[in-house]
Length: 298
Image 1: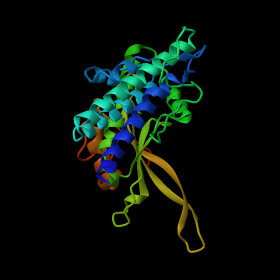
Image 2: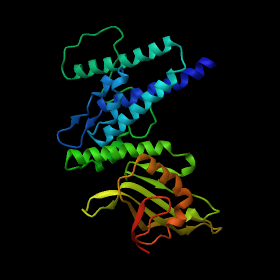
Image 3: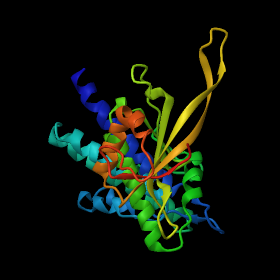
Image 4: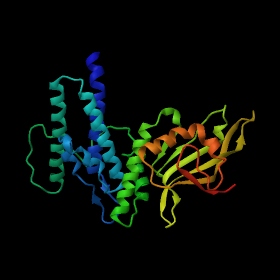
């Protein structure tokens, strides 16, 4: 039983590594015509821990940024699990990573017309049906389509900022406790916080946070929040609410791009503070934040 308990998180991490590494090279980048490949440099990182930081520097596209963030996260979890296993197990896992990368490169070269001779133990790969198993956010076609909608930038510098914003959102999301009522939307590229607390009445409000929630003096999108209120529009036979419509009534902006710690603190605090923030007037700074109210619709 002890060996099974030790093996399970290692196998889980390996599955996540395989999925995050394999899916991008099995997927066509259809943002432009003609369709193109996603980068493959990450395959070199699988067996080279010293180079893993480059996974968090890429800015090819938002979906590839997400896949590389997940790959880095899976590799970090794998490293952590391997600290408690015997050296032979660690050696076997490292060999598995190198083997995975090797056969993916061979299959990709063969797809491009290279004359590749078969070798014992060669693993099969098909672009349309890669053998991966994961339930993680972001590797499905729907999620890629969501992120592609946001992937329209005039300069490489703008694309890099968007990539950094997405990575910061993912970092902040993973740091939040389950009690923060936070969900992340790739469709809207934002957070949605819908607290439910009958004692405080916070369930009347919801909060959206994201890098495109405000507009700076130059007319460019920036980090901000919107607070909305739920209004019941349908009840059941007992008078209990079963339907509601939300409407935004307050916008607030960060004076500067927030840090990951700032964003995490905001998401955690919104559960208890949203009702008091909802009373702020234009020009007010929301308690405990650097957010300044820029608009109030009512």
